Image 1 (cartoon, rainbow, N blue to C red):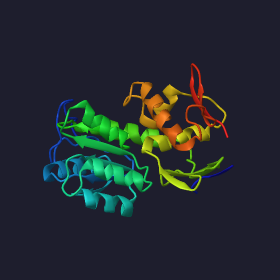
Image 2: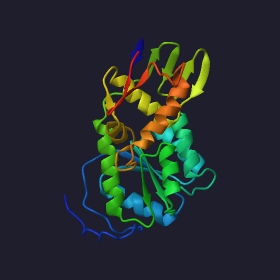
Image 3: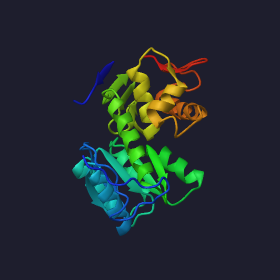
Length: 258
C-alpha cells in the first residue's frame, strides 16, 4: 500500500430579506483575506457582490462567462468560487463539472434563479458545496461563505493518492486505474473513498460522511451515501456484491480495508 499528501467602523446592517445591489447593503468590515472568484455576467450583481465582499475584507476576482471562469480559477487559485448557474459560453453546471474533473477541490457556492430541487441537487452532485437562490440577501451569502470556508479550514490534510490490491487511486484527478484500466470517479465518489481510506479500518458513520463530504445541511438523507457506495464499489471492487475493501459496518456506516 502507498499513500501520499500534498505537500473597525461598521455600516448599517441590511434587513434579512434585502437583496444585493451595487454600492449598497455593505456590512461591517472583517479581517479575513481569503480570495473569492465571482463568476457572474450580470453587471449589477457583479458590482454588488464585489463591493460587499471587499468591504468584508475578501480579495475579489471576477469572471463574466463560463470559459473565463475556468481560466481564472486555474490561474488565481481562489479560496472559494461563487458561480452563477446561467452563464454565457459555459453554464455553471459545465464549469463545476470541468473544475472538478481537473482536480480542483476549491469550495463552490452556486447562484441560481431556479428554485426547483432537481436543479440544486444536480449542482451538488457535480461537486458544488452549497447554493443560494436569487434573489438573496447579502447576509445569507456572507453566512454561507463563512460556513463553507470554516468547513474547508477544519479538514485535515488530504491524501493525493493511494494504492491497494490492483487499484491505483489518484484523488487529484478523481480517477482510479484498476487492472490497467482508467475509470473516472465522480466528485463525491472520490471524496467518500478519500475519507474512508484516511480512516482505514475504522468505521465511518453515514452522518459523518454526509457532514464532511457534502455538509449535512445540504443532503439530509443517509440514502445518498448508500447510492454512491454502490457506484463506488462497481468501480473499485472485483466483486461489488461481495466487497473486500469498501465494507459495510451494519448499524453504523462503512469502512475501508486493504
